[in-house]
Image (cartoon, rainbow, N blue to C red; front, top):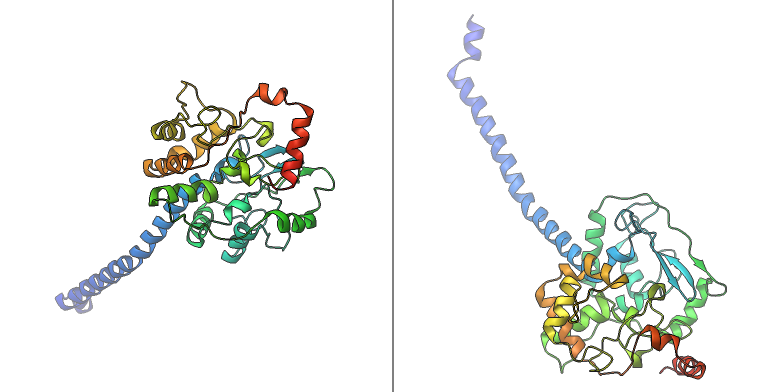
Length: 329
C-alpha cells in the first residue's frame, strides 16, 4: 500500500508531467527547424513543375495513354521514328541514377551519362541555353515523381543515321554550346521571352526549317516548315504581315498560348494542341506576354506554309532549298 501511494505521489506526477512537456517542446523545436527546409524544397519542386510545363517535357515524354514522363511517344522524322525516353526517377530504366552533372551534361552538351551522343531530336541545341538553376530545378521536380519501370523503346532509324558516333561530326558542324545571352537592345520582358522561346521552350526546333542533315536553318528562324514533327505543317511565327503573324497583336498571341484559340476563330491542332494543353496554358500572363514581345521583335520573313504550297513546290525549288540549307542559308 505504501508503494502504491509512492507511485501516485504529487512529486512523482509532477516529474512525469515535466518530462512530457520537455518531449513536446523538443518535438515542436524539431518540427520548426525542419519546416523551413521542407517548405523551401516544396517551393523548388513547384518551380520545377512550372519550368517543365514551359519546356514541353510532358508532351514529348508521355506516350498516348501512358504514365507522364515514362517516355515512349513516337516522333516520325525524315530519318526514321524516334521514341522519347523514360525520365522518371527509376534507377534502372529512367534517370534515377543520374547526378546533377549528368543532367547538366545532357542538356548542355547532348551527351548521355555513358558518354554517347544524343541524337539532336532531343533539343539540346536549344536546351544548352538553360541556366544551371533552372536545369537543376527541373531535375528536382522530376526526382520528386514516382519512379516508373519502363524500358526505353529502341529508335527505328535508317542507316547510317542510326550511328551515334556520327553525331560528333554533326555537332562540329551545327552545334554551339553555351548559355543564353540577353540582347542589350531589348527590354527585360523581351529578353525573358527570348529565353523562353530559344532555350527553355525550344520553339525554333519545330518552327524553323531544317537542312537535309537535320540542322536548323538559322537564317529562316521561326519562319515555319513543311516537314515538322510527324510530317506536320508548322506555321511561320515571324511578324510578316502576309505569311506570318504580323497582323496579330500581343493579346492574340497570349490568347493562343492560353486557350489555343487563334484570331481567326479557330483552334490549334496537332502537336501545338498538346503544347498548349500540357504547357503554355499553365504559364503566367507575364511570361506569355514576354513570348509575344519576343516574336514581334523578330525579322519578318515571307514564307507561306500551307498544304498547297508544299504540294505545288517545283523540283528546282526543292533542290534550291537543299543547296541553300547545306551552305548555311
